[in-house]
Length: 342
Image (cartoon, rainbow, N blue to C red; front, side, top):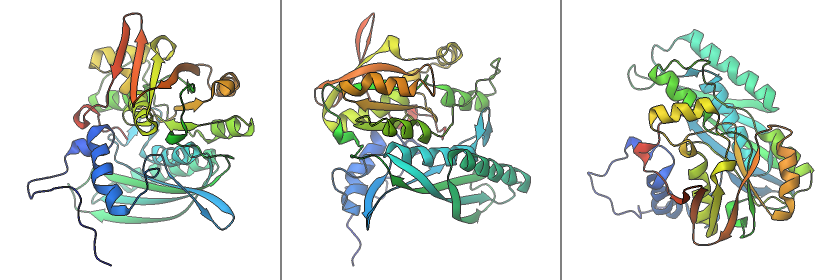
């Protein structure tokens, strides 16, 4: 079988920049112009947190992610815990019960074994909390100076327990947007640790498994159209991607979106918009209006700051934020505006 021809007009001068590292217009261009044609992906593929497919009588979800966070250890977590929770959460967003994970480690020559042991112990603990098993893996070593100590890839398989598909294209006008908690804590914790900013008390990452909350929504027999965890690019980026995929408009109530005072203050100091700051333990749920109040009651069992934050309207892939000052259109940021924090 011959290799696919690259569908993107490319020259020898074209290069991947750091800005392509996830989120934003540039990554979306890679997906649409390069990956989708090369892999023969259908329109409903490569637009969600994982793939869903049938194996015999079983319906499974599969997801993979790679973590390159710096610093490796930060308030509230580390790269190991982040890697386990991240893949667990991607599976949960597909309506799946996470079951098994693999781990791939790229280690830089000279990396301290004691720090690696600490990361592995953290992964073991996170897997235990999430109820998954780490069952296979691989390690590679690169030359000194060729990595940031360690990069981690986790892939995962889960059993789909949602009775109907949960995906961006299921979103419809009239749906309600719910947010599972306050936003911005992970990204601010990483940037504060990276820049040596001394917030008191220290801002801690929100990294956490989300499968229990999703499981509760499904067991409550609520109709769920789309779930999306709010990682790199934050709430705004996730909802813009959903709106563009579904071909709808989303209008948000700015006053309903919970941002803690420390995060808000840190964002003002750093010149950041909390809507675009990464989270690792928060997700948005888009549900029919008839399911909204019951879904909110379920989410508030896990976090009392969960809230209804917006509605889906007829439109063409736009998101607007309503405040006392009027409506503000939200857009995908370019890659250089999205710090590498996961």
